[in-house]
Amino acid sequence: MTIVYEALAKIGFMFALIMGMVVVLIWMERKGAAYIQDRTGPNRAAILGVRLAGLVHPVADVFKLLFKEDVTPTNRHRALYNLAPWLVMTVALSTYAVIPFGDFLTVAGRRIPLVVADLDVGMLYILAVASLGTYGVVLAGWAANNKFTFLGGLRATAQMISYEINMGLALLGLMLVFGSLRVTDITAGQGALLWGFIPMWGVVVQPLGFLLFITTVYAETNRNPFDLPEGESEIVAGYHLEYSSMKFALFFMAEYAHMVIGAALISTLYFGGYQVPWLPRPALESHAGLLLTGTLIFTLVMSLLIAFAFLRRASRERGKFQDARDREPGLGAGLWLIIGLAAAAGLTRQPWAVGSAGAEVFASLAQVGVFLFKLVFFAWLFIWVRWTLPRFRYDQLMNLGWKVMLPFGVANLLVTALVMAVV
Amino acid sequence: MSFEGLPIGTAAKKRSFREKLYFPEILRGLGVTIRHLLHNILHTADMPTMQYPEEKRVYSDRFRGRHRLMKREDGSPRCVACQMCSTACPADCIDIVAAEHPDPSIEKYPATFDIDLLRCVYCGLCEEACPCDAIRMDTGIYEIAADKRSSFLVDKEFLLNNTTDGTL
Image 1 (cartoon, each protein chain N blue to C red):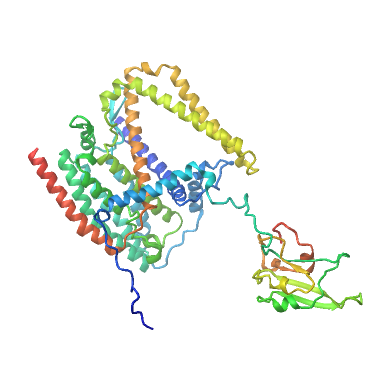
Image 2 (cartoon, rainbow over the protein chains, first blue to last red):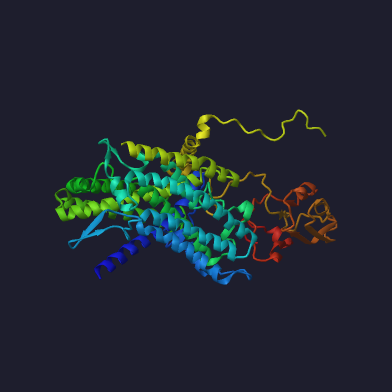
């Protein structure tokens, strides 16, 4: 039974992580876009005057969408119309099963690998599930019985077919280098050092493969510059035009969940996943005391700095709004002071002399933390790219996919195979 | 009409090798956007956005806001119901009914003076036309909001005692 509980706990962790990331990403998208475009962005929704720099807005959006009327077209295919949003969301969530978010964690003498399902055909699973995601989009476009949604679905199909080939080719190069289809093997392989000083990350051994892969991931997630299945000026909202209320919210959340997958895949396959550069697992454990002390000191200094910034804002903006929002800087300062105090309390407990059990837990947590850091960075990269690049025209998209990326993908595979055969 | 000698369309710019590689240019673009992002995070006060209900823009004294009717020293309207303003009004939003004034030295006075604020285009031709400076648009009120259309039809009493807040 323990193995079932373990699996459930890991699934729960992944589910919570993805859902939490979706909320954070929606906030990052709106706030990041605003700052990139010299705007302020969302800053009105508040709980008891605390606005969290706009982080309350996604919560308000969820409540709005839950209570909205679900308007449905009359001539829809009822079963498929209702199935499509669930299919999109389920597929978006199931890719995470094979992505390791840490090496292992020892609990009560049991070594628990931090991956939900360590499939030996993990890479095939990723490719298979990624292509299933298109079905939801195509079904949504067809079942709604609307010209524009249908065009959106068609565009999604053509785009997926074109870019999945390139994704497969890019991944083949990676599989050749690491000699395995198992995602945990590939991540473990990236902990090694190339010529003794460069971390053997996928991006180092497969630079062209990485560029091809990241481009196809952007296309597979329907994100700008490849967001052609939606197109306000051409096909209205695209495939999810006829969906409203929570069904629309599922499509919307699935897009962000796909972004989290994309970021997780990029960091796992090409940036070492949970591997800390130059610090493999044994080194992490033997230097745990030093690293833990450093982390605590860093947390202490940063939280004090942030608390100080909040206090300065509190004195500068005293009575600015004349309502509950005026409490916000004081509350922020209090929260960060508590975090700082917790770090200080940790420092008094002699973290430099941490025991071997503590060192193991610290190493596991550090690896999970590094994975989350990479995940958030690459998720941010999606947003950053979206607000930088203009989108492709459809023929440009096809030209890029078939005439540029496909030959480069094949060349990359051939060169990789040659190098692997010679070395 | 001849288009000879004029460039037709725009010829595609010849791209350099660096631009054809595409990725260096993407990185350059990412650099531009991140510079804006970091600048705005570090200097939130420089943001041109105004937090409207809390902060308000200061307009020039010449700004044409909601109308008001001027009074004589005894408190009666200065207007002599000459219909110059309603004649000049391009939106035809001023409705005046004239009546005989009890004082023989003044010919007429407005029995009613209604302005439909929904029709008004705030052009200021009425205050230009007025021969006795009875109508002015110098209140500076631009927040004109109400729950129903009939509230926007304002009468003489309202215009004589025009307030400075936005309520109708």
